[in-house]
Amino acid sequence: MKAAVWHARNDIRVEEVPEPGAPGPGEVVIRVGAAGICGTDLEEYRAGPLFIPVGEPNPLTGRMAPLILGHEFAGEVIEVGRGVTAFKVGDRLAPDVLITCGECYWCQRHQLSLCDKLAALGLMGDGGLAEYCRLPVQMAVKLPNGLSDDHAAMAEPLSVAVRAVRRGRMLAGETVAVFGGGTIGLFCLQVARAAGAGEVFVVEPLPNRRELAMQLGASDVINPLTTDPVAALHHWTRGIGPDLVLEASGATSVTPVAVAAARKGGRIVLVGLPVAATSFNFFQVVAGEKEIIGSLSHIYDEDYATAIRWLGDGRVLAEPLISARIPLDALLVDGLARLEHRPSETLKVIIHPHA
Image 1: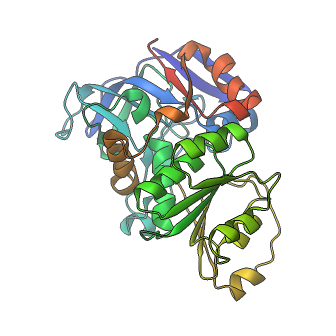
Image 2: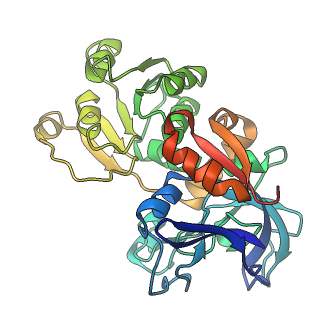
């Protein structure tokens, strides 16, 4: 079969590899209908290995480079392993992709994203940027009728946003500010709206993303290059500040601004992954009794199942965030290169492995 294989930094090849083979107990094999390219894939391409195991196999998957990328995907079951009753041939699903040990302190508390041995398909095991993929059914969610593979492949980034809002303990009617209008930020906007936010404001420097945020229901948008976000947000909230701030840009320079924007006693959820160290004066956190909350990934039966359900019933829209659809052969030139060199006009690129 054809697959996108990570061999080393700056060395991803779309090549012929063996099919995944028969599913083992508790596994299925799917025909991948659609897969998304994530910023993490680009980081592994240009700066990796970051998560990909090299030289020593991952203890949970037994895999190391070279391995198949892709952790955002959906497809149709073509074969089921022994003991699988939740799925049958012909069912369509999307996998949560996280693999956990099931034994550590965190797994026992169902805090799966904190597992001491956390792994993920597409990073520590063969993923979905391929024609076929074998995966454990425990991580899979069945797709509702009418939900396309293209949109279901967006469930993974959407579930990150679902978890961020959940971690922020948002109450109906509260005011929310989202810093960053990329895929995660625009999903955070929609999730907050779907969960009952009173107002949702988006801070984003790129004009096309600000325009899209307004189309997706933002109360207003702020260009941080021309307007002080803290002053604007406090003006719109009667001088108080937002109840919940979601930092989805990952830019180290933005975090202090996001903290300053939140009201006294407010919550700031950091969901963007910072790539460098930063310094910060925590005085306002202490004096204002603000909470800074980290949010990583998602949990299959909480965040991921919610993402699938909301995509299926239309509460959250995926189509406006899809920038391009391309065949697997075009991954390097029209996919990764586009993300690297044209980020201002690119949100999500969807791969069709069988095109």
